[in-house]
Length: 222
Image (spheres, one colour):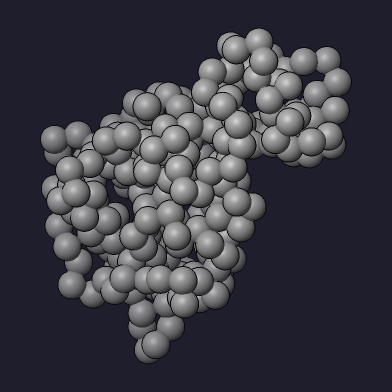
């Protein structure tokens, strides 16, 4: 599941959001850019991608680094990491955290635009539980759940307004989300850009450990 988290989520907990065929599935474009592929070694996978996305489309590739066919091109590639919880993680609720929903999406997107934690779209909040912190009525920090591979939940969109950093808000929200994940019987995982060494170190300090390195990228169909 963790080697193909998007596929596991789109054929499991997020099946109601899935668009595609028996080899390739993706989220609605206003939910998430993640694409799930059943098996990159299947000889029919490239035709299946074309069937779903059509020609001259950019298709997200993650947790894989496939050899692309002639006529296809890489739009971008970036190294990333996958971290998973260890027994050192001590999840706990955060009293200041409030649950966020679709009505909060404009504020959430505004915070993402200020902090750049990664892709967050108008309906990303539908992927799971999101929590945030407000100061003087303004959303200044948040974290939540994104991919849900079987038995696991990805913690994502961890961000804090630059003016409110160094108060422990990111760590507190991660532990709050992890607590809800644990109460549900899942285990927590995280993804990060390999270049974001500060965040990776912070996650390791909380009790996450590197499971694997990976590639986040996008290919353009012919």
